[in-house]
Image (tube, rainbow, N blue to C red; front, side):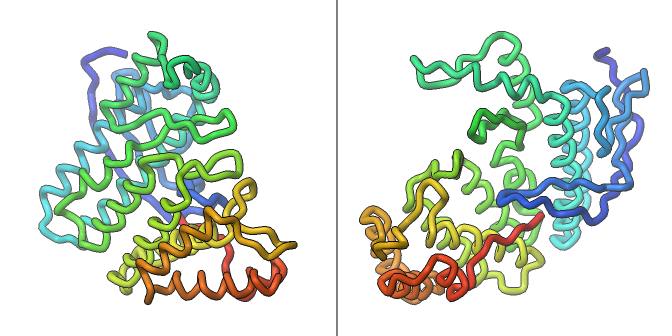
Length: 303
């Protein structure tokens, strides 16, 4: 692509999007009005509708311009409410760009796992992957292995809280900070935890604290969904890392130890109440389904 790229216009529009049944952050899938950036003299349009003609370089240019444009808008307002709106717009469009970029580069992403060196216990990238990695880094995007041989592109966790620091309201800033903390390491893969079980407890605790601190936040539903999902994992575990045996009514010692520590640290929390009720139900050899019903725990999804 020519270096003398002409950026002529940017019109951002976004509408409500359907939720994907995924535990983690969903992708906007039905944006009808597109956000367009003219990225070259050949009139290559980058928009929120997937196109096979757009390259990684095209998307990087669009992402860079997107950031500059929204940084300018943030600097032009002293209203945290307006900045919150700008975050919502920016996040929606940026996430769609990254999703489309992942869709078009399926082969590149599928082969990323082959760059891993068992000997060095780390990724040892060839020349092409190094070049792309450096290109993506400039727009705060990275390769992210999600387990079972799958890799995707994602925003570097610190991107949003850094960009919107001091601009959005405190509930938004706290939300972005917590998301960044959660996304620093891979949470789960292959139906099992990739983090220590006490880390699951920490996530439950900090989202419960968020809900207590910001009961009227516009992000309340998203925060509740995150709390509920982490709490469900904290109580039942995952398919390959379950917390107890239904038949014997015994909780595995390593999980029971974490529960005990949590209860001591947060004796008056909502989660502690749930843990205590769970322990009683397991001791009575209550069925898995009945425990779910009694505790009213199930996964909730958000966008």
